[in-house]
Length: 476
Image 1: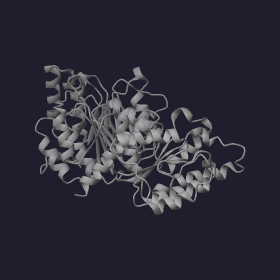
Image 2: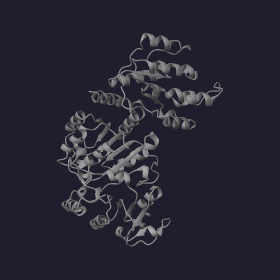
Image 3: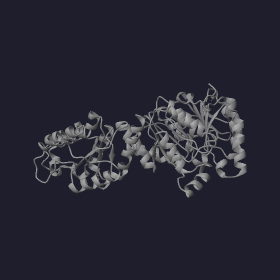
């Protein structure tokens, strides 16, 4: 299928992406020990071809898959990763058009991103040569990460696919996000690094992910969009039903200048962007970490309400700190209803604890069944939207009086998973500095159970009202 424009919305058709079965690396070079070729070959589930007119043999790569030109490959090639010098890109695009390649990613830079007339002209010629027959990611981008089919431009990328799509103009930000996903427990459906966006731009890729059945949550890093595309973007967003979280690069004057030199983007006034995000119910965040943490929270619990929260702490002082932070960001720590309070109070029997909101368990933490019952009651309460739990890691290095550590930790895992039973967020804080290596498996088990875990309350508390506000606007 030859990719065509969707004339109705003026977006490009990318439906073929979910059916990529073969690929080539054009410009596979011994100078970098065939870096991009080896990365793709290690994980891609279909045939991978090396294209270089001067290379006859590559160690640990099938000789029969090496060709001087993509035109010499006997079968179809759906995707090509191009990493040749700038002066050879145009002829390579000609070959890809002739071969019927559907999608190419151009890693080569110094086109419009160079800020020169020559670079701009060359990029325009690139589009003319493509004849609207081959779709282009880049130049100056890393292309497509698609774990379901093993398409990966770097080594040790995760191999399990998920439901989170990511669009970014920056390849470096894509790398950080993909490697961070292993630690955070989020899984990507697809990641697009589109660089200059000469052909496929933010609008085209967003339209694709909105329609993509493999994607449920959409993350974006955007520096700017092309002139004339805002109307198309509005039309796409008007029908969107998926949560979109955006990190906008170029909010300050120095940031705007940096965006212009990074990807030749028209960044624009952030105040206008902020109003735009509000109008189309887009969650706007301030850092890459917030972008990923928001995705993790939504992935675990969906879009949730977080106006009235309960806090459970092992330390009364830390619980007070959490209350102050939560109130600072506009949420409440309300007292429990008389009925709820009565039931909770029955489960407290050690001096120095507190059954009020915020709850202070102190040493009673080691009576795991009572903690489980309290959490169940709290999350059942209509006046409570969710629960934040402070659980220092050293409490999980169990004292001798715990006769069956395995059973105890399993009970803890079960009650930390109760948010899913009640369809309310339960979020755990285990401070980075309190995490002994001995509890690594416990923390990994939490991730497997889709329980979000943070090391610092500031990593996520400011994100909760953003998710709540999305829900309010979405239900209007």
